[in-house]
Image 1 (cartoon, rainbow, N blue to C red):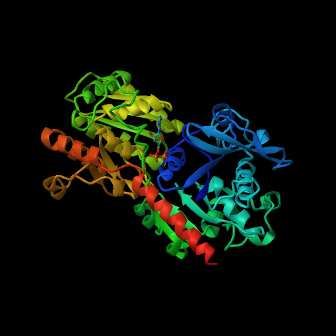
Image 2 (image 1 turned 180 degrees about the vertical axis):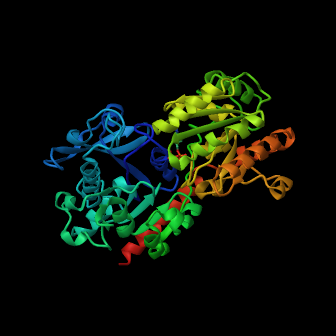
Image 3 (image 1 turned 60 degrees about the vertical axis):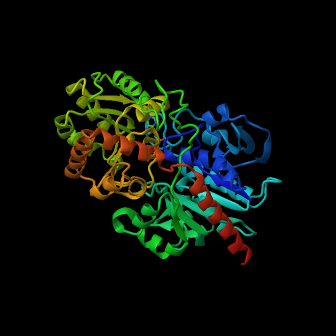
Amino acid sequence: MKVLSVASEFYPLVKTGGLADVVGALPGALKGQDIEMRPFLPGYRAVMAAAEGGPALLKLADLFGGPAWIRSGKSGEISLLILDAPHLYDRPGNPYLGPDGLDWPDNAQRFAALAAAAAMVARGAVAGLRPDIIHAHDWQAGLVAAYLHYQDGARPGVVMTVHNIAYQGQFSAELLAMLGLPPESLSIDGIAHHGQIGYLKAGLQLADRVTTVSPGYAAELLSAEFGMGFEGLFRARAGIMSGILNGIDEEIWNPATDPQLAASFDAKHLRGRARNKAAVQERMGLKQDQSALLFGIVSRLVWQKGIDLMLASVPSLLACGAQLAVLGTGEPAIEAALRDAAARHSGRIGCVIGFDEGLSHLMQAGVDALLVPSRFEPCGLTQLYALRYGAIPVVARVGGLADTVIDANPMALAAGVATGVQFSNPDEAMLQAAIRRTAGLWQHKPAWRQMQRNAMASDVSWHEPARQYAALYRSLQLARALI
Ligand code: ADP
């Protein structure tokens, strides 16, 4: 079976968050299920430079204002399709933002182009590459479903995955003619969303199946609190909706072989963690102290991630004798507040502002506990890395965080199955209580070691998620064959 995976990010070529990891890992994970998945990506400058570009398979004379080519490419073992459209993508830096930190003004065209070209491939425009299923990720790929729905001809089934409902891709209704979609598409059962064109809305409304990245988030999306305006649509489409957890790449994220670590270790030989802890303390300007409980955060610095709750909880954390190391980048106000906290509590709080893949690995290997105080979290990857590296995840009880961490409540501790700490209603008081509870657990070294062993034994691989995606694709293909 052939699946075309349409997305705006792909690890290792272009990444701003977890979406890239998932799109990068799925093709390898699905091989074992006899599924050939090909990612279809915009030809950003970084992608054109790093992918082993192949020949043009199709030339499009004019794609939203300039010529474009669909090229084959390769990243490691993975075969790609790349939309080479220099007028849309040959730009420096971030895939979404210009140098001024604002969205590129033509993002509507940039991602409509990706979707329109993907729809052509879906209908067999590239010989030998006609997919059986289109898997569209997030709003940047949402219009694929619209192009396939409103244009004639046989089409494959479409799966739409929401990685984060906060990013919806809404644009002025005046762009409709430019998109090449018919006037009737701008309706409530089409692509219209509150008087605008909704790219994610289009995908959620018109795809054959909708998935999100954890069962917990799939349930939360039905509520006004988490649905962010889409709860009605999700309720209407609940029958075709499901949640499939993300896995992680266990070769890249393997503490026994990870080249980014100061010392390797595994579940049976945890001693190497101490050297990594010392290395994190050094990088973060923290006091060298193995006995201090070292909390870490690796995160985009945005409201969703609850970093402000953490900043408000600094006194509680310090009162427990703990240290805090933060790696992150994002909103300038949060970055400034972190720098300020590090300056005021030098040696006990440290931060590195920036995106540093290598340091993110070292952090997972060196911190004792990884804090994830998110207000909402569709799946979350950092707590999965933490489990694998024996850093105890301390997480808000939302979405995929709730689904992947077993709270150290008295029953779980007695049964010897706890893997971390959860707290509900992400707010300051609850976070502070969780920090104190974690500090209490830290005092009981045998219990802590047991949690580390449990955490490291958790199945965070792609094995089960890949099986579930394969089953979904197959059932959709069967359902469409019966139409
Ligand atoms: P989201 O996709 O919402 O950002 P996830 O937890 O799903 O959150 O994925 C975040 C990914 O980005 C993880 O792979 C994490 O390690 C990585 N990451 C986040 N911030 C940084 C950073 N400053 N430096 C390196 N990696 C980071």
